[in-house]
Image (cartoon, rainbow, N blue to C red; front, side, top):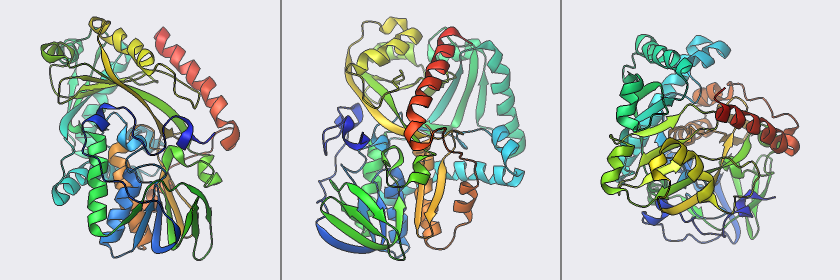
Length: 434
């Protein structure tokens, strides 16, 4: 099954609140016939658009090929949370990497947050960034670790922006009795992801990037001058960047064995007006401690944007709203009869370690993907790191590529059914409170 076309109409954005509240780009023409460039980028999401922009600013000619529209995939559909550091915490990183590498990874994660705001300011677009991401612990046993980690970040990294919360403190913000405590990261934040994608695309186009939409890449022929093939044309280039994330398909088997596409679902309720203060008393985003994470925040027009639910096939469920309503009303029973105005799904990508997979399938073919739910800032930063590597400055690329990203059992063919079994087990643990 080709996930590019399994759940969406060709060239159309989903019926999301993000699409309804964005100023879309004019359509770019499909690739027809022969073209050439220094670099061909496959995928016009955060990674590909950022790579293209940074490469063009370095003097490279760049062609971006997108099967649908810029920002069509996970980049324009996600929860919009801009987290601190890496997807795994410093304890995890230091257990597997030299301490200095772990520290440099923390710094890259922090630089990624700054990069988004710098790009927005420099290129004159507003992704609607708001500070604050709250981690909500569903089990009392987890609170002490959450608080201790906040102390460790302040002590070891000088990061004193995480506020520990006890049960009453989190209840005052979240408005639910389900959580025992947590921590509010004032240095993290949330934004409108599709506006970020469109801002990056407009900046890239203004810098001289050539974008071809509705241009499905079918294969890449490696060699001294790789050739990227679409249904109706091909690009000859010096370097290829694979920035397709969950939509990589069969373009590279080495990456596909390590990066698993999965679906996630989000709804936007009707405007809550004065009821919104009973849901979130502060304009922060929230993610809970479930293995199958629930995440939510209020929109600028006072809707609840809530992501969650489980689906382990590649097809989206027929009633996405019903899938997401269940965890939403578990946390907020008062929303049981609320109207849902938008419900959409998206395909992201994970790795076994939940850390991104940076790879070099060939000397002049580079890939970054598998952000595992931490991709808003890191995917934008990945584009910059890929541009550095193409320019011969590969220190940060090499560091990211040293992070362990083992293949899934069964490789690309059997990873999906095996992951479905594992995720079903973890979802059951969440429900049983284990």
